[in-house]
Image (cartoon, rainbow, N blue to C red; front, side, top):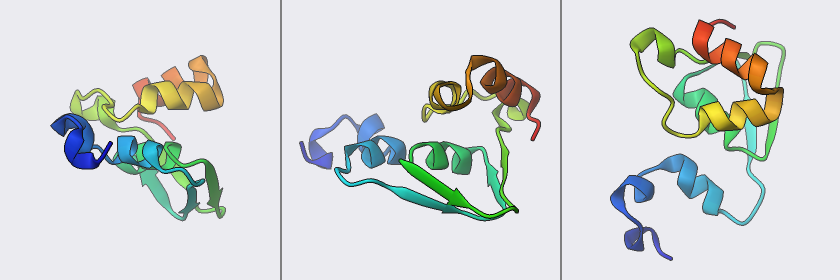
Length: 92
Protein backbone atom coordinates (compact mmCIF):
# COMPACT_ATOMS: atom_id res chain seq x y z
CA UNK A 1 0.00 0.00 0.00
CA UNK A 2 1.16 3.51 -0.78
CA UNK A 3 1.32 6.12 1.97
CA UNK A 4 -1.70 7.80 0.40
CA UNK A 5 -3.68 4.54 0.89
CA UNK A 6 -3.12 4.59 4.66
CA UNK A 7 -5.26 6.31 7.27
CA UNK A 8 -3.88 9.78 8.03
CA UNK A 9 -2.70 8.84 11.54
CA UNK A 10 -0.44 6.15 10.02
CA UNK A 11 0.57 7.97 6.85
CA UNK A 12 1.97 10.83 8.97
CA UNK A 13 3.61 8.57 11.56
CA UNK A 14 7.39 8.27 10.96
CA UNK A 15 7.69 5.20 13.18
CA UNK A 16 5.03 3.38 11.16
CA UNK A 17 6.76 4.40 7.94
CA UNK A 18 10.12 3.14 9.27
CA UNK A 19 8.48 -0.22 10.01
CA UNK A 20 7.43 -0.52 6.37
CA UNK A 21 11.00 -0.22 5.05
CA UNK A 22 12.32 -3.59 3.92
CA UNK A 23 16.00 -2.94 4.64
CA UNK A 24 17.60 -2.69 8.09
CA UNK A 25 17.66 0.81 9.57
CA UNK A 26 20.84 1.74 11.42
CA UNK A 27 20.61 4.62 13.88
CA UNK A 28 23.82 6.56 14.58
CA UNK A 29 23.47 8.24 17.98
CA UNK A 30 25.42 11.04 19.63
CA UNK A 31 24.49 13.15 22.65
CA UNK A 32 20.95 13.44 23.94
CA UNK A 33 18.30 10.99 22.68
CA UNK A 34 15.17 12.37 24.32
CA UNK A 35 11.43 11.68 24.00
CA UNK A 36 10.62 11.69 20.24
CA UNK A 37 14.26 11.00 19.38
CA UNK A 38 14.17 8.06 21.79
CA UNK A 39 11.10 6.72 20.00
CA UNK A 40 12.80 7.14 16.61
CA UNK A 41 15.92 5.35 17.90
CA UNK A 42 13.85 2.40 19.14
CA UNK A 43 12.32 2.05 15.67
CA UNK A 44 15.79 1.34 14.25
CA UNK A 45 16.98 -2.22 13.78
CA UNK A 46 20.53 -1.45 14.93
CA UNK A 47 21.76 1.38 17.15
CA UNK A 48 25.36 2.59 17.15
CA UNK A 49 26.46 5.32 19.52
CA UNK A 50 29.42 6.80 21.30
CA UNK A 51 29.97 7.35 25.03
CA UNK A 52 28.02 10.62 24.98
CA UNK A 53 24.61 9.06 24.30
CA UNK A 54 22.02 9.81 26.99
CA UNK A 55 18.55 8.28 26.66
CA UNK A 56 15.62 9.91 28.41
CA UNK A 57 11.83 9.65 28.15
CA UNK A 58 10.26 12.92 29.30
CA UNK A 59 6.64 12.24 28.29
CA UNK A 60 5.57 11.98 31.95
CA UNK A 61 6.97 15.46 32.74
CA UNK A 62 4.42 16.91 30.35
CA UNK A 63 1.53 14.58 31.18
CA UNK A 64 1.78 12.86 27.79
CA UNK A 65 1.69 9.22 26.78
CA UNK A 66 4.22 7.93 24.24
CA UNK A 67 2.32 7.60 20.97
CA UNK A 68 4.95 6.06 18.67
CA UNK A 69 5.40 2.78 20.55
CA UNK A 70 8.13 3.73 23.03
CA UNK A 71 6.51 1.95 25.97
CA UNK A 72 6.19 -1.36 24.10
CA UNK A 73 9.53 -1.25 22.26
CA UNK A 74 11.53 -0.16 25.30
CA UNK A 75 10.03 -2.97 27.41
CA UNK A 76 11.02 -5.51 24.75
CA UNK A 77 14.61 -4.23 24.71
CA UNK A 78 15.34 -3.68 28.41
CA UNK A 79 12.57 -5.56 30.22
CA UNK A 80 9.31 -4.26 31.65
CA UNK A 81 10.69 -3.15 35.03
CA UNK A 82 13.51 -1.01 33.64
CA UNK A 83 11.20 0.39 30.94
CA UNK A 84 8.60 1.36 33.51
CA UNK A 85 11.24 3.08 35.66
CA UNK A 86 12.67 4.99 32.65
CA UNK A 87 9.23 6.13 31.50
CA UNK A 88 7.69 7.02 34.85
CA UNK A 89 10.72 8.70 36.41
CA UNK A 90 11.89 10.72 33.39
CA UNK A 91 15.37 9.78 34.62
CA UNK A 92 18.48 8.86 32.67
